[in-house]
Image (cartoon, rainbow, N blue to C red; front, side):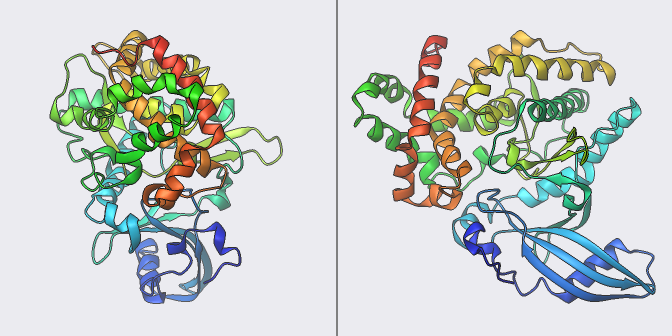
Length: 420
């Protein structure tokens, strides 16, 4: 397996490991075809599943399996997701529970969420079909490939208004159901306690821990931007720790007036696939993907994350509109599923966004410079996390600096740099 345009793919997905062989996929097929008396694998093809920059925490392959089952020729198209086996990704995630989390989400949590929706006549789909999983001898999950079902990844553009709306509708329903369960069944989500910002191996990560330093060095070379330096320096030592506190708040120091839900944890449009009517072009569905980083935390965390990781500059200017749209569906879902407690208000949502402003400022000063360049195909996450040279390029990027200045003015006017 060696794609011609290998520069488009992550290096660890150019060659599948030897254990992804006929014997392994025969086991997978027998898990799918439980009633089969006679099953033979005839042909196996493996390819990289995604393009460079589409994901990071796993290694993924697309498999086409042709086989004979009780005398009938059949084909399955699969997505294979396994743990990184080399490099920085392995160092960060090898001690994590991201596969335990995702398996639990697909086999326990999401089916329950969907059943709650079915009980009120809502046919919303929250997950792609999972076909196989195991944690030993290797951590691996296999999904049905939904590309043949008409789903596509966005390429070369940001999500448009209709795509954003459908994404927020699904998030609102997901959040509402988890909010109700978390209140009515304390402890139900206790195993979902580690998101990306509460993982153990982040302290040595260049982007996470030294990003603010590189930003300050860049601004010192730009006379018109130096007016922002005192504000950044005043919180320089607080941002990363404040972000980790936000991620761990529910389990470490929950607040009585907070709105806690099961967060997606990595809510952006590269973790979504979109399905359109092939004739009219009408958007039919958005499929949320990648639940490896799901955790219980403040409801606003997914929304703040989407602000930087899904919206473009113009759409960020309409964020209050998107929050209102999201909130109406969150509230409506709680009412429909019979929640009898006090429904959080829109004002609470805005107040808690401000309370978690360090998380928002951290994403502005670390994730946004990397994401801006990655979306244009000019950098990759591996380089952003590990290379000083790439790191400096991210902070010198003109598109990022224009957006940074725009948002800094906004945050100054909102009092984001003031103490409580």
